Length: 109
Length: 112
Image (cartoon, rainbow over all chains, first blue to last red; front, side):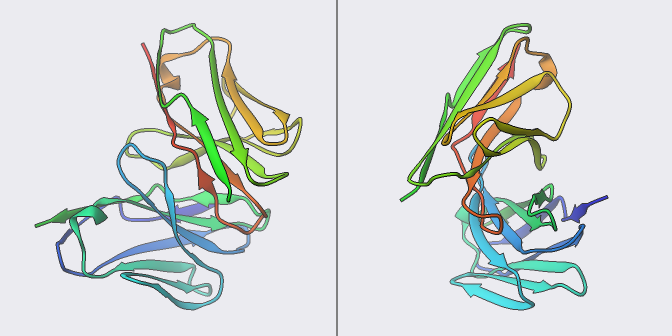
């Protein structure tokens, strides 16, 4: 079966750095997305990785290791507005999106 | 630019009543269209997807159905709602198979 694992919940302090991990076991791999979802809202696209390495976009960075089936989302200089759920999604060999359950990130002052 | 519209934003329906949620996409043609359901604090469950007019694939057997009467219109329906149908329903589109999904605002459905 296909499986994507993320921690259920994480807590961090405003101004700090947090790393949200995602491991996947899918039938094929054609890319990995990270999405942000605030409570009661739709997910919004954050990043896309298809090759190994780090993609940096402002305060957010995403890393991929295809050989390890592993990705992480790194959030720097945390702000209260970063409190949200972060979803990891993988495109499988059929070009379908396989979604993780999401990680709820709680930011404390 | 492309936009996706989904309505209504919230809906309260009695058990046994019918359902119709509509989603339309603007600014693109022949998109892949998706209906997801998200239970509170959970991930996205794919319900239906469509790669073209009249082409519907169902991922989860249940009392819901989907239709795509036009290229950029995707409808989620039910003849008789169950309590377990409550949830947050999201419509999404993708342009090509390896691009990101863009979501509508979502519909919060409560079956009472």
